[in-house]
Image 1 (tube, rainbow, N blue to C red):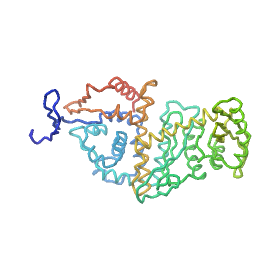
Image 2: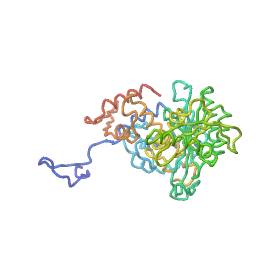
Image 3: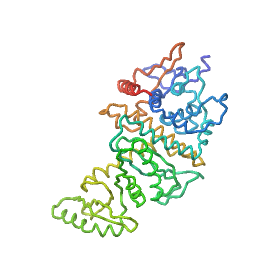
Image 4: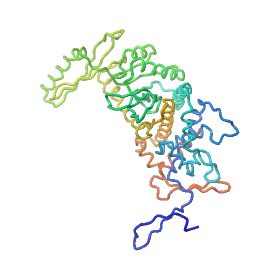
Length: 446
């Protein structure tokens, strides 16, 4: 029996003593922190929410894995850094993942395999995906204890490179590659995800962006009829269709405005003013803010345009935004519009740390479902981060830092007659923080 256990050869002695390493540690896992994610998911009800949007034509008497269990296992794996579906072929035996999915570590049935999960990913129709997207907006609203007086919706798109003949894949000259260009919408204050929508690899038109925002705004207003909504986006979304929609829906907006010949002519006196001030003051850089009324040919009305002019030794640079919000030009640009830079970090968390660009299925429906699963993993990691104390460095940590600090923990799980014994490492460096975050998560409850 002893000789059949694999061992690790070739280790150099330490202190004159031979190292003898064998794979006989018992029911160990390197992802002990997934048990924290289990409590987060129970509080959100995320797996059940997504599963409720799917049909299930299987014979109930023959079901081994429910759709909610499969979605739950997939989201846990993504959050722990196992973004590929076939990673479950190994993780299905892992005691910590089995426990997180509600199965006993030793006597419980193993989790689902990759073929089972692949069938699930190819199951949803476009109607079911639409229900999922709306349900995720409802989840966003339900995640607040109190209805906020105002929310800021940050909207942006990003490139998702493809490597095959996937549906919706297009060649994008800007990125010099075949890609999707999904649109993401986040809450600017909390960083909570609202919608991630797969779309072709091209710049969204004004009609398309307005249609997406119409669904989002109406769904949020269905939950919160009196909430003030402000939409913030770059020049891709500074289109007449988007502005008309937001004005009709009584929403505020601050949007980037692409520069054209008329705007350059309008801003020329401002550029000269900033350059003159810099020359007279002797400073390296002078920044000024101006506002004026402007109406493009495609616009139905005169709108307020704010300009930021920066003069340096290399010349003057000017940027425009369009808004329907009151206030002075400088705070609108610097405090409100520039704050959308945080959106880049949210997309980075979603795309880089949950690997949401693993959209390698042929059918667009399967890839959209994958995007929702990665959004679910984002929710788990985001709520884990929010459970840290407000002044804790974990509160601003990246998802990868959280993963290394709280998820990638060795754990021994022993199934006894009346209880499960979970042993974490005595040398684990973040014991107080781990215990505090666990208490804060479980206090919220399902």
